Length: 437
Image (cartoon, rainbow, N blue to C red; front, side, top):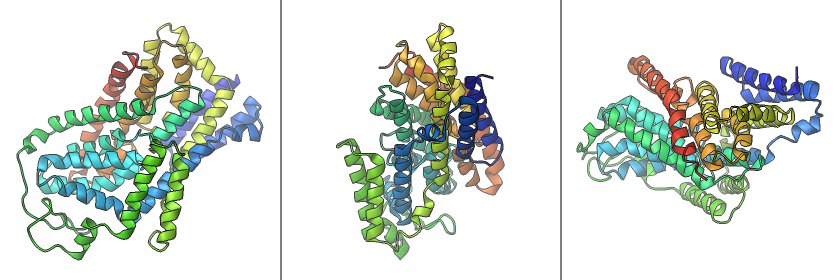
């Protein structure tokens, strides 16, 4: 068996085993990188570890550490409550508040499942209280998280842009971000209209309401005035504390430093996180434990394995096979569907790390616009995260009331089937066929 075929089979095994068994795909990737790299490709340990993405490792740790601090000191809750109060009792805007807050969270560095895990319980409480369709509310949270997920300072955006850079291609960070945001926004508008959102227009709530459920957190006045006196817990959520103001300032500095001055996102994030921890060591205690180490392992392992894949000649072999089709657009469509179908059952970030390098030779031919192709692959691999078998979809279903959970699961399953069937096709038609950039 040739090294190229062996490394491709290793990739298939990695996705199948990582999906079927509760084993971190990154750990599998490291093991396969060692076994195939050493005994099939003939690489030494140093050559294998040369593919380890050290810069991306710092970005993942720094951003998730900073976000863990923001979650622990209540900054995220504060942003949610400010956003909800800002709608002035307009019930039709509440789903869009959840969409926007989820998008902002992922845009400033939260991994998509983390944003959904925080916003979904709040969103479903509002859905039950105001009789909003739970499927629609959950989908807007997920599409919001996916829409903001490819900003230049986000986890997905950082992963994708660095993969493109490591492959020697010229990508467009802004184009990728806007393509994902607009695509998910258009899908969310369709979801809003299809699942009863139009019936909410004109409905208002002018009162003040306590918690929707026991343990839901601070009371949330919709209009922000009138009603019963606010509790101390509520005041803590609507008036920013010192730690929250410092965290907000840190997030602003992260955005400005990274975007305006080109500073390394990971280094800036971890520096801000350390400063916040030094200023309030007790308040931030335990935040480092909330770093998404499983995601760090996943990404680092998959990208290290991709380096072995490239060294074995598998990427060139696949690209030559695609080239021999003589139809670059068809090849691009097939890659979008491969990314979308695999990602519906496996990790989106893992799929991103593997599918984009496979498309690089196709993009280098000049027939396909690199920016549009990368954006289409990124959207195809993440738009399907509405599947109840993915983390995002599962989080929403898990937060539904027990009596409606089975029904919601089936509705998510039907919707995700439609997305898997149509999502990659739409992304390809909108972003690849016009040959953007």
